Image 1: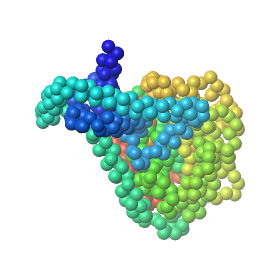
Image 2 (image 1 turned 30 degrees about the horizontal axis):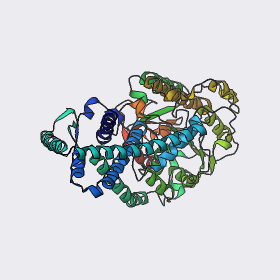
Image 3 (image 1 turned 120 degrees about the horizontal axis):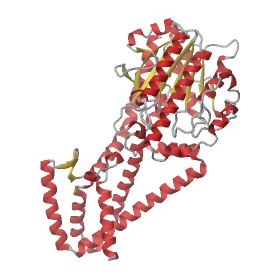
Image 4 (image 1 turned 90 degrees about the vertical axis):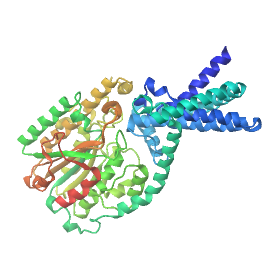
Length: 530
């Protein structure tokens, strides 16, 4: 009895490894009612192998299948967070980024535990797959006649289903070759990744502003303080999803009215980000460099090149350039690429309040510190600042609240807001709770920006704020695009007059018909306009 149960479990495990989708959103009962071609070929191979070499060959086959199953599991994780499969050449950095995120969110001990668990899982999958395949091979050989007849019948059924295109679930054929296709698709990723470096180098070298003198750059913004602020995970879903949009749209619409009353006008549209769910640095580099950086290899090559960034054009034109990085906790060599006169990391901003999960400080404190350290200084040059706002970074709890700007101080006032909050709450699988927390975090970040402009804005302030990417699929659902809202706010009418030909919509809240640009197009359009 135990032997029979072990054989059945081995069969089910191998079947799962062969036909399970690599995206949990495609897990349906019909997705498992399939005939895997690889199983038929494997059985035929076992029947044809000489006894002396059968066991080592079968063990190798089991190891390969185990690796494919590990790859599927990694793909599942990437689909859940980044809405795409894992790239074996370009995505290893995301593993490090994931560990850093866990460390910041749940502590070093929790991150180490997660890494150890992942390693144990990989080893267990490989061992179980090899043992299962070896067990099934013994059964195949012990029942040679029955196996041969079964393979012949199932092969005929497979061919018939393939010819007829038979399926139970639309797009999921009964005649399955998904394991082979998974291996093929990832091998093509490897090939494309190896070729992409040369292609990207040519794209990055093509720069019409490379040699433009500083006195010819940004003449339409002379004397202005320009802030480019990335709002973490502020995606199109926030202003169009039926469950999220009413509250977020209300913030934007009320913000439009408030800023208009303060003498500010705004124009909004959409940009298509190179990433989704994470990888904010890819979006930052793409927007500021005007080159599509959708993977780590492109990013690494970009930040070691001499490509002119928006930061660099402002610096060349006489602005003081700053990077205000509230989540920067370690050395960051890439800062040189972004041509900054000053980089403010966590230790430079003077924050004495509590962490808010991933976010070391609330967005309001980040903007308050920037105001104090840069814009409030006497006899200064105009400043250009890149400021990522991270209060809307997953796991979206706890969420700070706005206070009077005069009370921000060293951040101690935010202490009670973080006490008693369940940091892990947004990651417990309650999608409704996660979406609500996401929405609230976006409302907070947007309200903070609006309030900053009301409080500290003047005729010389120009604010560009945008999302870096859409949030994870747990918020967007499957199949969401990569569009993010972008808005330009200015008090001086001449600033927005220069972009009147862009067709952007009035106000902070673009509607579904607003223009959509690729994010890498923004740099050149901005420089040509100003």
